[in-house]
Length: 116
Length: 116
Image 1 (cartoon, each protein chain N blue to C red):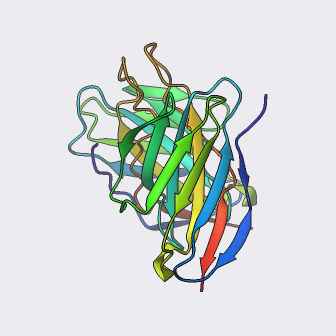
Image 2 (image 1 turned 180 degrees about the vertical axis):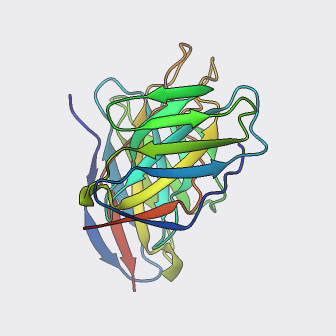
């Protein structure tokens, strides 16, 4: 069984730049959600993609955007980076759809973004 | 999604049983209670999920009283490797017709420190 993989694992950007983070979902999963985790805090929900469409969004500005591809992999894009965007970005996959599921999310190891 | 309250931190010693209690006074009828574990610089990992009474798996037990306004995660005979942050989450993972399984609200969690 292939787990959730994220890339890159670490990266450093400067204020105003743009960043793209990538996520490959676990085999058989069609839903990807993204979380931001600042140091010492719990993960905060950014948005979720289901069937290649955004399906729910947390309290994040429009400069946080995403994509989901036909193979269910996903990208998180952040424009006009700010210092406060420094965090661990987590991707999680799950199976969504008509049938009841356990609700278990499978998280990747995360991408550590540092904005200078 | 219902808000949860749990202790910020707990200490224990190897071999002891650890019980972490979570309050969720506003839990809805369709909500399940889920616990995740997170090690530093890793994504959260699903531990256990339940709706009422008691659930047990190879890792932990989850006790839920009849009013469901709280729950207790029980870790038997902890070891040093159980040192981690434990998150209690409440929500409905079973929304048919659309995917809602990725929208979890994490609090600050409970940092468990296991000492030798």
